[in-house]
Amino acid sequence: AISNNGLGTTIEGTIYDSDDRAITDFSSSHLGMGAIDFTPEAGQNYYAMLDGEKFSLPEVMEDGAILNIGLKNDFFTVNLQATESAENQAFLLFAHVRGTVYHAAPIAEAERG
Image (cartoon, rainbow, N blue to C red; front, side, top):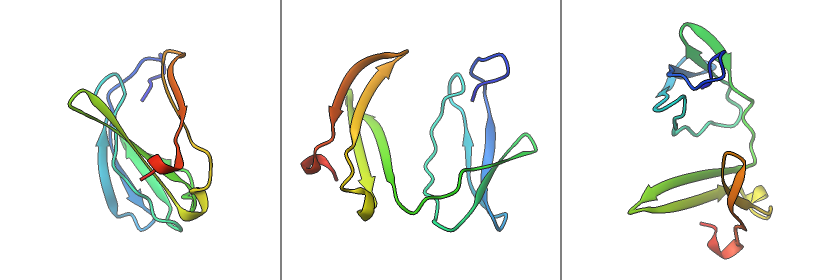
């Protein structure tokens, strides 16, 4: 999350579905950055509540991919899951910091899991 002054800021909120059921809480961890584990359902609409203000989330798409990146024993693990209609798409993995690309490579079919 970025504040009006362009700097990262601490936030806390909750994601709700269209029936106003709380799905999951979230918060930033450092300089406005954070992570959330949330798999939306096709046909459902979602919104986030932050400081009493409602923010609609983008429409859920039926086709696409999920990318998870983890760190274990000083190694990054990358897991890409795609829907059947998206699994024949070309996927590229880029690692960059402040505009400098440190790694760029296609994700080969055999490496997909």
